[in-house]
Image (cartoon, rainbow, N blue to C red; front, side, top):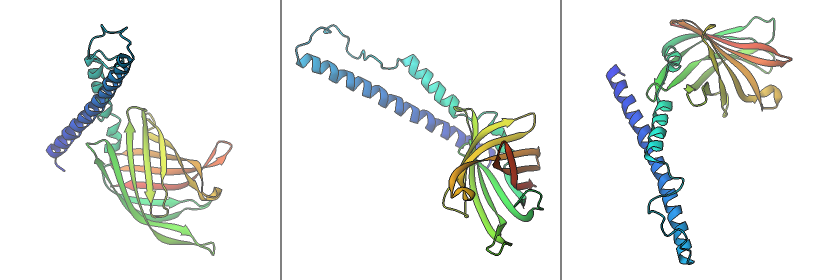
Length: 243
């Protein structure tokens, strides 16, 4: 997509955000006005004229024009990509992936290859990842065999909650994983705690640690760490992405 097209898409997206917020605020204001009108009508029907001098349209609790303007300003501010989204952009493009699966501490990893394509979407607000490759999976006889692996993920930065997040799904299951965390600029590391089904625990949800390391514009890596208890983490997956 060209730079001009991206700018137009961002402008349209922002306009939609503003329009949605305006509709929501108008609906809220209308609800307050109608509720207030019904309240006064009910009092009038019962002969209560204690507030007969109340001004029409002066609905208690209704946001003032100044308050609505501030709400709109906040909606636009929170909906506009910031400096944190530049980290997501740095992963854009097609990458060659080298996957290393560690099955137990001290063992040499199984190595396989793959490719991934990352694209910014929705006005540069989110990064969409599509991975294809092979993974060595355990077999019933204790060995391992190459298995087709495909997965998709979405990563973003939530300006309201002030944290990065990701959602991941792949062809090894019908469920999904979510993760949230922070970026350490000094270490150039993005660390998230992920939650998802754990086969070692009867498919009950458990936590794992996901770490992205950004070495250069042409190389970054991803690691998955399993919680072994007592503050110990075991790295059971590493993927190195290179252009």
